[in-house]
Amino acid sequence: MARKTAKKAPVIMKCENMFCAGCGHSIFDRILGEVLTEMNIIQDTIICSDIGCNHQFQYSMAVDVVMPPHGKMGAALTAMKRVRPNKYCLTIAGDGGAYAIGLGETMSAATRDENVTFFVMNNTCYGMTGGQLAPTTQIGQWSSSTPRGRSIEEHGRDFDVVKVMKNLDIAYLARTTITSPSEIDKTKKAVRKALEKQRDGKGFSLVEVLVPCPTNWGMSPVKAMEHIKNELVPRYEMGEIIDK
Ligand SMILES: Cc1ncc(C[n+]2csc(CCOP(=O)(O)OP(=O)(O)O)c2C)c(N)n1
Ligand code: SF4
Picture (cartoon, rainbow, N blue to C red):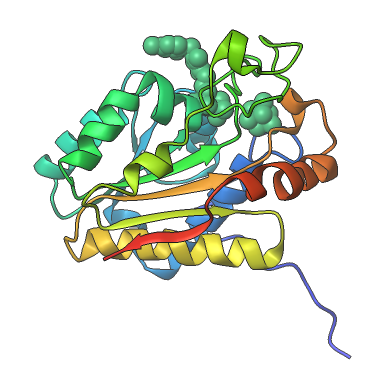
């Protein structure tokens, strides 16, 4: 009987990644690398990097990168796409960068329906700076700046950007996760679809991916995946939300 071997990494992945063990960013980068390879668009892609753990894709992916100040991907992508309309202009961002520090730029790009693509890794905290409270941190969730957990009285409610964005006139909006092979498959399909919308000039696309940050959540990689399945997925609208 033929032995099953691990699927070879796409050529765009030039070396091992530098993320913590079990980090969701590494899984997403592999998914994106496969999609760019399968669509044969690596040479036609410019990734707008944010500041945050997410930025480490640059070290393991052979792709052109622009890095604006933290959170300014909406503005930078707008400029990139207008100057280079034939390029796929996309960002891999964190929830802190896209939904807090850069919320204005993200929403402005969406309300203008710019023909650009956001991939937002939502790990419900500021990962790179030590796991502080972010707008996405859930009520009751521990963070390094809210050691008793987020409370509505002390820290206010959490903010679901997808819930707001679904009322906008944009081309594609989806929320997925990576907790199992079938969820990874759904994420991959959403990534491809978002890029196809950009290829076809349909307008703004955003895929939010619920990803684990085992290090700042203080959990093992396995427990962090269970946390997404049991605590995050039930609170969020999942799947394709806008598909024009
Ligand atoms: C304008 C600005 N504010 C704050 C920071 C500090 N800072 C750098 S990364 C980061 C958190 C990033 O969190 P997120 O965007 O969720 O990405 P993750 O690290 O979780 O991938 C912060 C607050 C900064 N570099 N610039
Ligand atoms: S701190 Fe969290 S987000 Fe950053 S690399 Fe480690 S697991 Fe990933």
